[in-house]
Length: 284
Image 1: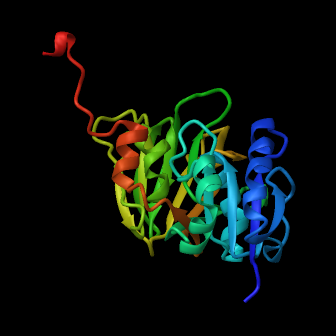
Image 2: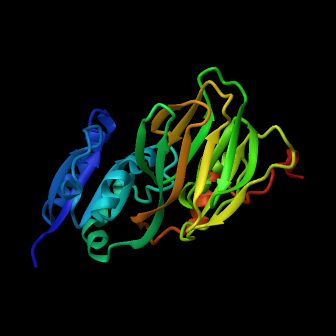
Image 3: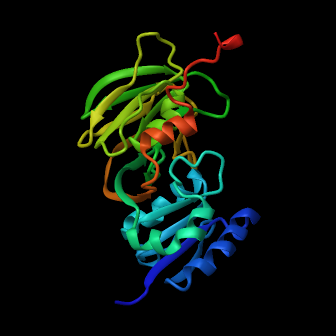
């Protein structure tokens, strides 16, 4: 059996990322064939990202970007956190330096995360196809005016939401924008999507969880002169009224290596202070 093939990925224009990659590589090269990839470069064919493992150095944003390259290749991702939150990036650089052999041998805790297949069709004839690990948002344009978004589920009209927009999230993304917008936390291994209105102008509008085989369509109302579609907070497409954003669960899955020393609930408590009691004056 030959050496493992590892991709060491990150945004190398960031000095802290480059320095961390320099720190980690000497610990990896005795154990594997290491190839560096810059996340800022244009993505190549899936075969370019085929490896036994990818170590992505950065924060959750880096993993979201890497997922669009790694999932089609079926390459598992281990996130090395040097960002602020590190919800998806489960390892610290020091852990890799201290236990590279054990981490590579044991493989961590592999989980499959669903992704969204996002297809945009505009009245002007543009057709855009992307994937998302976290979420897709149809919202207001640059003038930040209230927007109306029509939502269909399996081709049945469900509601028209008026507010800042509507998002469709995976379980992975349920602790991101969806949570900030008041949506529920979904277990990361669920096969489901959540539809959440953003700052709705009605007290009765709430989130809705739908199954993984569901087909969701989002459309800015026809009178909307400007709107936007934002995918994973990284890809921005301008929309107008009547354009269609079609969202389904993608065929491909993203394989994430979780740190077996930390549970998902522990991450919620540590990173988002979930379930922490309120702080009272004088300890009362």
